[in-house]
Image (cartoon, rainbow, N blue to C red):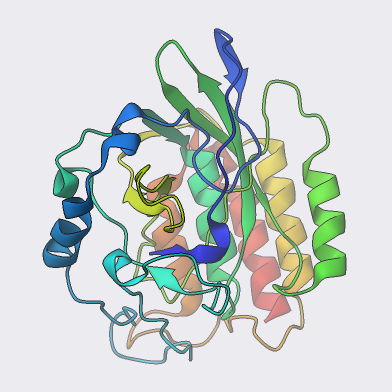
Length: 292
């Protein structure tokens, strides 16, 4: 589901052979022509084709993290923009097939990015947020996500958020940092990453909300675990140390698995080809035990 708070505004992309992604709250790609031709009846089709909102998946029986599920709403129920609507409202994503369209761009994301997002999401009972950075190639219409920048701050802390954005926006060579918020509930044994892109509303209804579209992604396995990922993991452990919402990793998540076992199982599918980093991850896991 997409949060209304993450909806970005349209900007033109420079026409260069390969350029950095712009800093927006959506996948930074040019507005596809199909977006301008979505007819009024497409909203009715979405309303009929979308499944009923489901509650949060709480995983197998056993001890679980306590969290109130946020039930998403259907896009067709939103109507025009309304300042009175809660900006944290979750909206169900729509597939391109549901509106008889093709995804107008391709997305690839590295395993190191997924590993860091997954690690961050497992540390706390609260929602987490961060930024994604990558490159946009106009020739191949490919957005490649190469870096993740977890926000070591609390949602709603405006003062700290400003400092985080300033740090993230520092020049980093060929990698730019478009705001790409990622959230979590209570994932199963392996977390599910669900990318989306906010497609502009039809031209005849410019005051409607953008349409959150489900995006298909190709995953790239990195050759090794980079130092920046290890540093971010260590800083995250230090940030949540002693926090009341820190996950108790030595407690049972299910009848035969602790929360630490659950974390290890989820990260196992996102590790790089080179396995020589395993002992370093074990050191980080030891820090988690001490912190919780």
